Image (cartoon, rainbow, N blue to C red; front, side):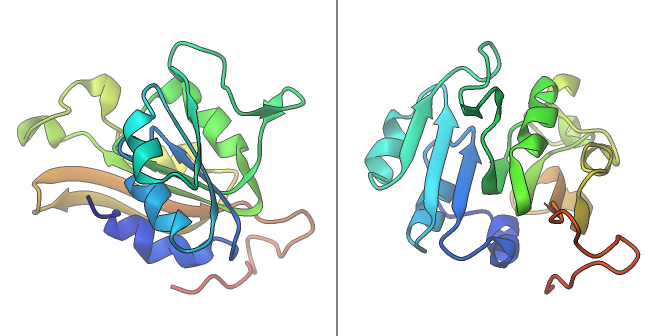
Length: 182
């Protein structure tokens, strides 16, 4: 399986050789993509066996992140990563933790299904579909570099996605943000 075009498009925002967290990593497609480019990758999912076979160089944490305490903590706080990557996954109670896991200067790359997807397939439960502008709301403490909310033809799906950076302390104000190449 290939990496998401959205993730690949915005991966240049991640510090070279940085740390990447692949949340709900599944088969490890994003873990593999980043590991092949020299990043230190950690994946988390309730079943990591397939990902571990696909990406032996990565570190995988087997955990039910919907029912257990967040497993990646440093001194009681979420462990920071240069990139937090999430695709095709939504668990709202975890959003604050995921955003807190973005290190200063790090990036959140998030892409998942949104309201409307119930008209073309699964997931169709509102619990698993973002509402319009919801990612923007969750990322209000970050500098949004790119955001999309709409319909994609292949495969048919309604998607919301964001690339957002945590500006380092003392960085340029949001009025005059640092330059992030598009």
